[in-house]
Image (cartoon, one colour):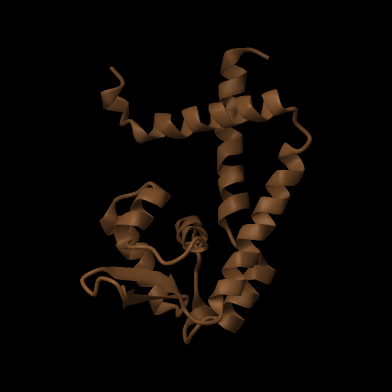
Length: 159
């Protein structure tokens, strides 16, 4: 397989990978609807929304922390969070230690749902990556990071 064919294959596989990791399954959406607040049943959860939900599995985060974790600007994360708030999946609240800081967290009942989504993806990835040698897994991660980082640079900046 020549380099052009490899590039074409990677281009075809990346969106599939993104959908696989980022889009909730019908079972997960049913659980989100059941456990979320009012409006959760109408939720249209995008891969960006799932990234926010996954990031919150580590605990409440500020918009700035979420933006860094998801890899987008704070205004973009604010839009994602706004939609998740509208659908009753997350809430904003003041940090008890610093009232000036606003944190985003799951609404009551969503912690278990989000933990399940994260664990489901983790188990799936562990199963697949478990078939690789340590060297292959490290090379895969290195390559994937390089691809992701390449998209962080605007095409006009590459010259």
